[in-house]
Length: 275
Image 1 (cartoon, one colour):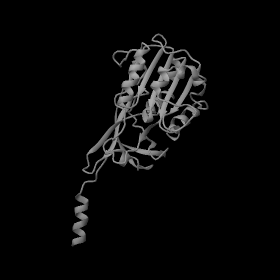
Image 2 (image 1 turned 180 degrees about the horizontal axis):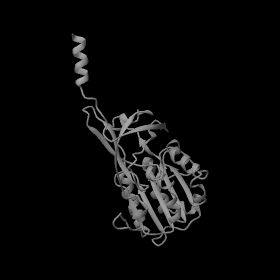
Image 3 (image 1 turned 30 degrees about the vertical axis):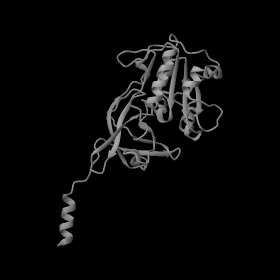
Image 4 (image 1 turned 120 degrees about the vertical axis):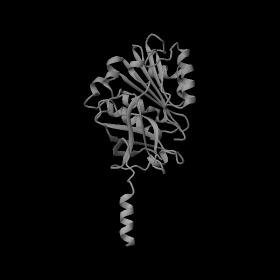
């Protein structure tokens, strides 16, 4: 009698079904603090490279725990890729870092964001400026043919504390040359400038310092920024965004938005510490 009642009680207990569920197809841990993963793409999802969506898991009470994550894969990809930090006590990433292929996550199919090509006025040279996992939206844009159709030159400046933390971006950039879809389009248009701030590496220093000192222009053999030719996109911590905005405006660039394109745009929904 007891066993039968337990079975009936179990049958009556509703299973926690994930809303807007997508299935994890691949997970890669880059360091003890960084990982990337790929999930199935909803058939109805259309997005512009550089946009973000809300993803997450259920909390202990069965309620969705969601955070904004830039889509790291380009708009043409059949799957969606994300790049994340691991925060041991973070409400979401303390759980998310343990996902495995076959698991499900919540993905709200409503993409938004300011790091899109349409939010910039036409120009000749495009700068991607990122720290840490802020490279994610640029991982999308660097793999989009439209980026190279609109710009003669694309410069990816990425700064992390250590060399190991640059691995995701470096591997992606190196793979573009041999990419069967966009390898020819990319050609020699893309310049990669990875720097570290704590560990010794060939290129050192913060993005702001390398711009204001002119070191990046000298190292790459290019002219300094100016409003007529240069466009920029920024993604990092709040403090980084504020500092870079000041530097860009020092070169004469103005902040734009989807509704008011200008010379640079900043992503304010960056996934950073404490997630």
